[in-house]
Length: 292
Ligand code: ADP
Ligand code: MG
Image (cartoon, rainbow, N blue to C red):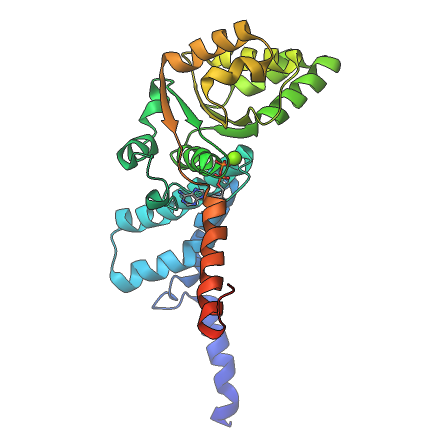
């Protein structure tokens, strides 16, 4: 008989009648364990950890990481992704009108602003004592920039924040009163740890709007902080609010625990405008005779 024809039969018999002397590498078992781990991560909704599992396992093997170190690395991926998602959510909720940051504030252009005070505010410690921040100054001096920067810093530190303008707050309260949602709306403005109210004073407010802002300030008093910006000194708030009694009561609550920053330099917008003009003038006088 031709031996080459018999061999396959022998091999087949051997395989089916007894286990292989050296068990096959445990890849099948490992694969099933791996799938189980992935499924655990999916059930627990640890999607980022699941996604990074192969890479972390590869690194663990390559670098000879301990089980503890590998687990730490895997969960750190999930924690980082969760924190990034939460921050993005807080920033979305904050409704910031510009990308301004405290780091981007140019102190040379704002000589009246105390750099140390802003650094202290950037730590967000004032939120723990429900201290308010009042930014007062003419247009273009960086009030909104600082208010946005403070709100962003608080959101980054994990606080719930919300940015609005006095006019928007008043309009929303007005609609809420008409639609019977006053209490819900007041709860909404009481919620964030930091509420920024921008541009008080650009528009004279009807009595009803002044009452709404007063109520928002009152219910937050000594509990949570407000950053408020105004182009008018506090002495003129009676005019803005159309009622000196409401203005006095509101100021009383706002100022009781507060930091007041007076921004009284030149308008940053106009500085940029003047600088552009100066550059233009320098370039043109280089090529042409100045006008006389
Ligand atoms: P205000 O609210 O006082 O009218 P803004 O904060 O809106 O002024 O400032 C106007 C523009 O100038 C914004 O783009 C702001 O980012 C910029 N700006 C104002 N002051 C500064 C500053 N000191 N450093 C950097 N940018 C500034
Ligand atoms: Mg502004």
